[in-house]
Image 1 (cartoon, one colour):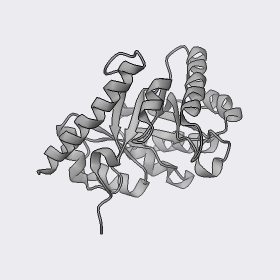
Image 2 (image 1 turned 90 degrees about the horizontal axis):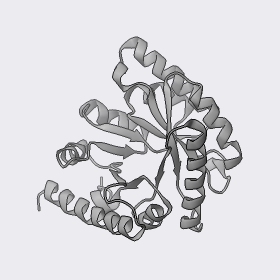
Image 3 (image 1 turned 120 degrees about the horizontal axis):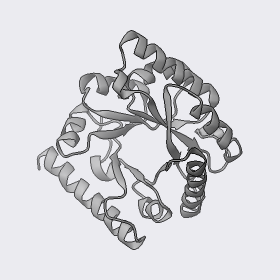
Length: 236
């Protein structure tokens, strides 16, 4: 089977799962965005996904994402993995969005990075401000990435005061062994409360291959799916 046909078939299967979950939750069909996660897969897959109507993808590693963006500038790549502060200048040049913002220090580094990228012509003005999602640590263990729920509001306030970042919503990955549905519902509520304060809806990025139905039932707006679309990680 041609690779594009394989991707088309896999996308259709995942979209059917999404539509079934939307129906079960009484949500409008098409209300949930599917974002393929392309880590470890070649840039050619990004080109094929774009042909199939999926021009926004997620990547976990800065160096890999930067290389793919350079090879295929038409892609909109969301950084969904942890970002080291020292890599913020680089991320600010290529990222279509950052879904893993988890500290004031990183927010300030991205703010400086976007300003510098604009000054140097490395980031188009029309792609500014940079959309960011605050990654929530559902269990308070920030070593795995994420801001604690206790510190979430302070981080949101700080981001809203920055010129070159735009608060888009919240992102969460349930810890292993956690009740994923409970985590998703709790973070959805936080996103809604935050939206009321900001005066516009906040998106929730939650749900992957194994738990997207629970995420959609809880109100996720965007699910991030890798293996079910792209297949197993290439060998070598």
